[in-house]
Image 1 (tube, one colour):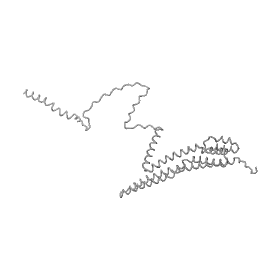
Image 2: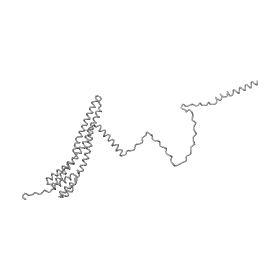
Image 3: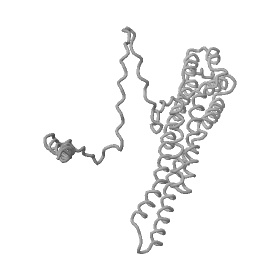
Image 4: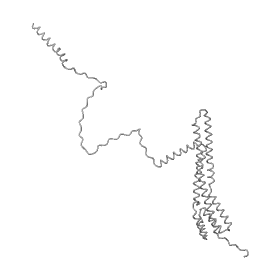
Length: 307
């Protein structure tokens, strides 16, 4: 009997913890199950401890400026402004390129017109220099010499114009010399000869300008006609596939020669008219001076037949 009681007590002590465990599980709340995010990192990194802040002493000096970011390699630096010489060189290159294109588009006639333009400019500049050299715009010395001769001071009149290169002074000097050494009729002939000689020298180059003013427009028209012929030939060769733009391009290229010819002929004609007017004024001044000299000369005394 005693053994049975001891066995029963031992069984109760063994089953008591097993019965108490479910009751404790029901009384205490269940621990939440952690949810795993889809994008959560595989392993959580431990948070590093914050570094202690360092005490910075107060200073009145400004903080150093942050370094500027390096310029992008793809961004180009702004170009430096061109100097005056570089601008002139660039302008000259552009003008030369345009002139060369103009000569290529104009055809063979435009080259002849370009040569005439150079000759025209050279003739105009040379003629201006030549007229200035012979005193075309100065007539003071010759006028004073004539006035001195009219007052009867032949020596002073001859001294004023002697050795001068002006055309008026030369003619007056020749007339004074002829009046002093030759009879009146022969003196007139000598004065007229010298005047014609110097006037002919002053008119040198006017014939070339007149020729250029005449043939430059004709060369332009010739180039236009040749260009129109070439344009219509290209239009005929195109046949049914003819493009109006092809004909228009040929026409405007052909008209370039006409414009170039007129551009050369107009200044040549204007310069020719101006030079002729200057020489006409010189001729009038010479005739006036010679007439005044011969009128002022004392007539020779006529011998009476009875003497």
